[in-house]
Length: 284
View (tube, one colour):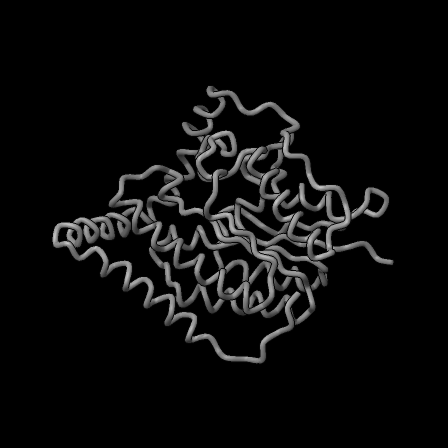
């Protein structure tokens, strides 16, 4: 009997940023892989996720490589980076995810998905800056919810809950989980897979195996790598984000803020309606 094959697709969250082990990242997917099967016959794990990936990269680069491995389980956790770009288009996001999910289900792969908290609230941005990002992330989450149901994915609701406000769950950058947060995600995914009869190994421990980074180390990260991370995204996002914030302020002054939410809801509905209606795959 061949070992269970698990392939992870996505961005820095799945790459493991925030959970360093030696000179590399580990993360929730690697922790989950250890608990998918027995120690005597461990699962084969491949992590294709990389920092900065968007839905386009998942569709065009990661999915073909993952399909060639013919995984039994595949995780697709993506979308936050799309919301941080001036090119954000919920129609394109929906169309790409629809193709990705369909491709894995066509191979009878068990599909793992998740909705995520919005980066504006995690970074504690001012309201006028945070609201446009929150609106975009809600749009992505709505699409992920709808397509996860359509394709019978095992879906993790990670966009809400106590873990978001618990600082012990998060790394210094406030956008990526720390080791404790990655372990929480791994345990929640393991529970979904165990309930579905897929995971037969022991669930990952909730307790960190390494001491958390010191405050000094966190401040050093923010002053070095963290600053570079923000700078790379600011050159692309900031001009548009300021425009979006100005629109927020104008609508609030006029008492018409609800129009922005309504417009976003219509865009999501249109994006989902635009997807081709095909024969629905069997649920996992």
